[in-house]
Length: 185
Image (cartoon, rainbow, N blue to C red; front, side, top):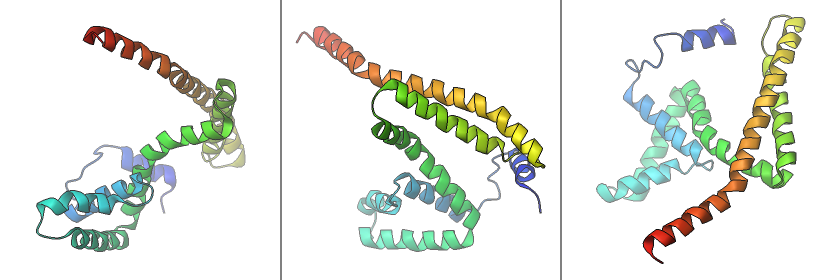
């Protein structure tokens, strides 16, 4: 059985993203799963049914039931694609929501958020780097190598995000005042 990195290499080496042999119901299932996951509470089917119902002879409930049946079959027939699509769907929502949750937990001050970002980045680098290598020594060396860049990167990104959050109200006020002057209000 191939290890994680061998499988990753095979999947990321050319030809990448070749969907020529993918069945249409598989692509449809992947898209629906991503939409379900993006809503976190699984409202993708209801959103699709709400969009399709006005243009169809079927009712909202019939379309939603059909989507749920198709998704159950997709989950059973393509478990790996289902899991990957779930993660891909959740990622953007979590990327937007997680910083807000951390800010709410840590507070709105810049320094504690930068420290939290740096800490979480360092931990992510340590555990991510610890997964590389065959021996314990190689894993520890890799974990040490990954910790600092991830910590610094996460700290810098957090500082930039906090700066953008702090500067947004004055910038919005500036453009609002500018628009009022241009419009003659």
